[in-house]
Image (cartoon, rainbow, N blue to C red; front, side):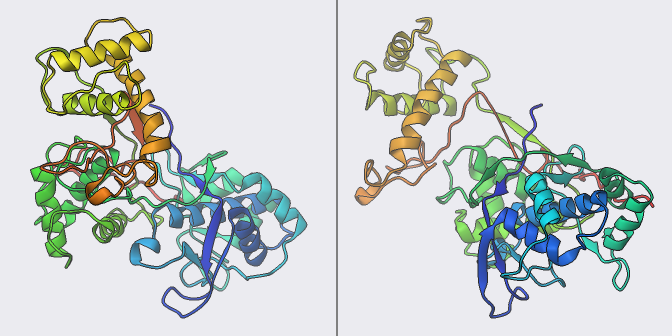
Length: 419
């Protein structure tokens, strides 16, 4: 199973006070944030192994706040605070220690996690003298360093079985919200996230009905679960997942799985296969055929040799003709059927158009009332000119919260630390 890692943000916004305080926000590069916190929290004269252990804890904790959208999902416009009652010390405008700065440049995109889990560890720490906590003792880490402990031995002595993930990818902070509302007819990875999250939340709130098939298709069962969730948590029970419902679910999921705590139940890797279970051919019907037809219809608008098709979910002669034309153009075996190779090649060509053209409101104003279809919102809906789906290549791996959940299942709770 391929390894999927969270990303390190280019920049992070820090609130200079408690979460609800009327205080300023400052946005700094993530590496500068870590340098600031490390220079504020620890002593530059400590042994290097202690400095490394503390810096990795600082990085991991901050990334956990970003990954879980801890404050954003609560309606705040920042990722973390500088208040040590909630987060880590940050002094706006302060200078950095040279040796700390050098180590941070090496370590700022490494982080801690539990083996087999996805999310960065919420690596809490305290000074270990005036304040103690369930996490790393800063002065204790220096004492261990003086005894010859390496940085990873120091970390495991406080956090238990953890691993260091090196060189996580760096990119700008982006919202987990898919960009447009999810509703009946929507498909794609965002729907899988929604389904798995609701199933896990329903363990704590049994009035939310289980979604038996985590298939990435927003059908009547998903709609029923969404409506029940909305009713329980005081949201408009319309069965549509807009930003308010999405971030309410993010907040609740983080709470029930304790992802923002040291004793997290953990997110595991989750896979969903978007390739058809068998080759699509004359006589095939259903959602996979609709997905195929929609991608062909988009390509036919740009490639004259591919004839247009109707998106009706029935693989007839017109669909076969379009498939043959596509296979001919891209030098694939001209079988008229769609197996893995044809599907993947077709998706590659479709996604290139989707990324460069369909996401532009100026270039592609095809929605109702001459408005653009939102990014990632293409495909099939009920009785609507707008299209709702997110098709993908043969096996897409991404960070999904757990596994298929049924009544009686419970996520494992890892041993936090053995001292």
